[in-house]
Image (tube, rainbow, N blue to C red; front, side):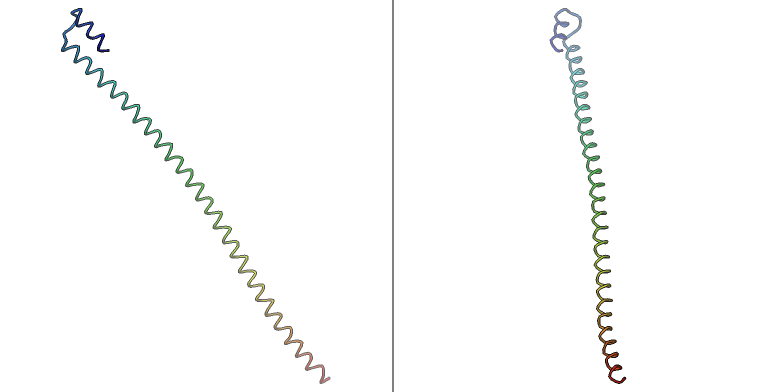
Amino acid sequence: MKKHLLEGVKKGAFTTEVAEARFDKWMQEKAAKLEARVSGAKRAEADVRRARLAEETKVKEAMAQKLAEKIAAQKAAEAEAEAAAGSEEAAAEEAPAEAEAAAEAAPEA
């Protein structure tokens, strides 16, 4: 770009100061465009990263919920098994007591 401006100066179209001013203006505009493009790319990358993190968080929460439900179901099954085992033990203890009572009643007869 500067070469073309200097050619204009040689031909007498404008002065060196005007050529330098135009070149500086062009460089500033070019730098602004480049900065906008870079910041836009960074912003887009950050948006993608943020969206990916949100999706991973949703998946993680869903997995945690399933795991919590599974653990709760296991604990409920264990509690139910313990309750069933406790009632079987109580029934087993009552059965010999009934058998003893029946045995005591049988010799008297």
